Length: 339
Image 1: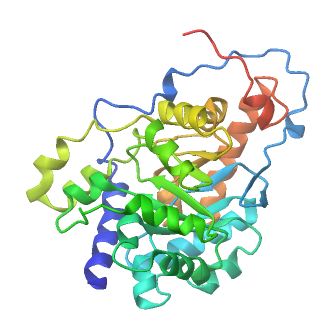
Image 2: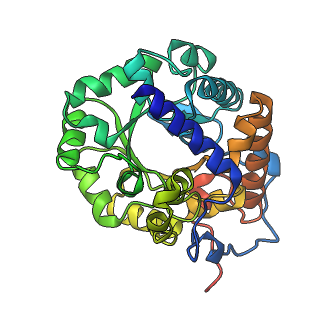
């Protein structure tokens, strides 16, 4: 079973790197957002403050390296590069699924060594919602946290991906109750989609269940139904019918903030650059998450990942400067152009 999962995870990386598994006829919606340019910012660019926090840990930049994974050997190298880059720049890091690591007791670079590479940053574990069923959900959650000394745990929701995947987990009865049980047990719970977005109704149910961090993971980036279709040609026709399915990122962020004003909202799903991050923060996000946009760098080196995020930070800082925003709080009030 673990070997099959590892092979599938490696296939996922190859499919995403191919660049041919995006959405069709659906975008993030961020391209429709336009800031009003401020030609008199009355700021020094170098003084713009991009700091943020997550799970009580300070961050120098409001970026989350969103969940990425691969086969065990490959994932170990990716996780090492991501951890080192996140520590160097002061980013948050969310690991990929810990399913194999939990079953094999700490493989794929998801052990104590990862925390040693990034001792000061917010580190977030990751377990699939379906993996919480049929077992002690609280015990599984705590194992995932303890394995990497994480500050919080993402429960990822991927019903569409599972539905089109050969042999996927398709009985989701009891998932919300399991999430609520984890939250009530004191586990700092975050929930994310994998790229089809979270609706306002789902966000409301999650926060009522005790979830404190919401990653909307909206539609417009990598389409995980098409990723599964690329792996299994027999399932391609089913997967392609969902090439335009989901809640676009811009809409998901707006709606999540409206129904969960006290939650930490993370915008991910198709963000391309620091200007997209600025737009997402303006719409209500606290942090901007990047995965596919930095995956190629992650397979190269920690230095490549750091260089990519330094460029993203510069773009975000310039966007703040050119809207007259001294920090992220002011960016959230920056004027937008009328549509």
